[in-house]
Length: 124
Image (cartoon, rainbow, N blue to C red):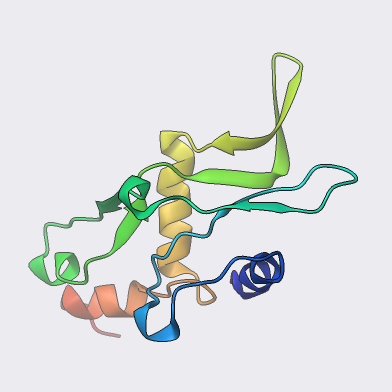
């Protein structure tokens, strides 16, 4: 899902982790683009990349070691609050829950639903 975005960020100067060290949970850097300027890439230091484990009452699901960034940010969308337009915002709890569900179930993202169902003993 993020292949084009990842490629564009690499074109802007970011080097992703070596292929053998990449995971589905690698964080992309923060990219700031202002009118008339080239994009600027800011890598979040590893010690600040807090990931929250997604736990389940099913030990098999927990064993998948799924995780989510502790602070999720969205961009390329505008949210207006009190007449002020924000082009990047921190996710609220409700948005985060929806985003996690979308990522877990989307065929073009993690597509973890079949594996989760298997771990829970759910068959076709």
